[in-house]
Length: 199
Length: 199
DNA sequence: ACGTTACGAGTCTGACCCGTATCGTATTTC
DNA sequence: GAAATACGATACGGGTCAGACTCGTAACGT
Image 1 (cartoon, rainbow over the protein chains, first blue to last red):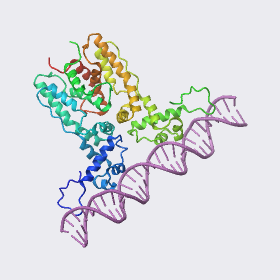
Image 2 (cartoon, rainbow over the protein chains, first blue to last red):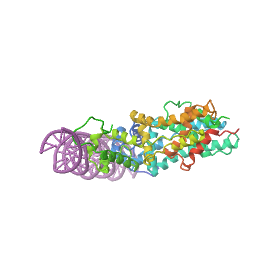
Image 3 (cartoon, rainbow over the protein chains, first blue to last red):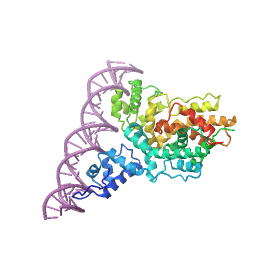
Image 4 (tube, helix red, strand yellow):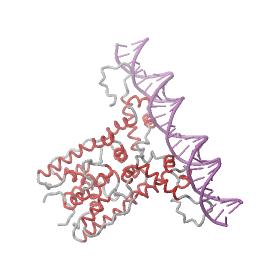
């Protein structure tokens, strides 16, 4: 959506790539600093980026379009499971939940929760981001079943929720301040693997 | 914070209880209809409640104070586990997650996620609401350990996250649209009890 | 009856914001 | 060098909102 020029040749001054960058960065910075999505104003972004408002409107139709591009920048690379031990792969994937390359992401993510449930567009964007990660975990679980490490009768989708949920509520909602986030992935995976029932 | 009169005796016209009620209800209605917390204006609340703005400012210092009172109203009664089967009690508690007496609660809850992480006050309010529920689940788990139904070496806090997380991400974030919310509590509890590992 | 306080409705000032337009200037192609 | 397009800055009309204020009225105590 941005101005990546594959246009044949345009006369006149070309758009500044630095302005593109500055606008996106300013948007993410402001969000990470505590501004909520709707409190975020184009004016504030322009000021922060050292850019005129017109420069923003020349590139994006409005706040939504800009946010879409800005948030796209946030989604980190997918974790790549090693493929040896199912248990270790799951620990890796669970540990990667809510952990993006950009440190600002952690602050921004909780803000998206409301938007996600109120706008179909944003819900779609959200699903686009998480569904490849779900797929990754799904494959590891299937592999575990094939290898006989996991029971064949488990519900894969429920199991994914089982693994993802605890990590997500902790990282996004700070559900239980006393839980140690560092060791949580390991403990979650092991607990789900072994169950809690006496036997 | 409201005007519940335990003041000795005040001269003049007493505050209208109906106004209190109408204001709170209007606030919750507007939130449930899709307004976000910060898009919510005192003016809109006053209009909706059929009340003058001054009547609101007479009772609350500002939007935050009003919201605090309004949201307090939302938190439903605690589910009361029967105390017979640990498994059934857990299903009950897990099923009660995010299910409040007020149907508006489901729509409003996701909006709180961002607020919770940005304001210490609201984080405290949030913890106040969920910590008694956590305690309830903790007791059931401890009972299970005492009765020998659950393993003695489980980490109770992690186990609670295990049970709560999947339900919460589903109800609040609609994490996986394909998961059936009705049967989820049962399936989560059983999966956590039995584990997914082949044996 | 009278003072006190609350009521709904409305007004007013000062913010802030959106999205557009218009400056003078800078950078590119032809 | 001329036309075209970009730039940052700023001004604009139109809008919403917070809070404090003012009405005339209503409900309470003494």
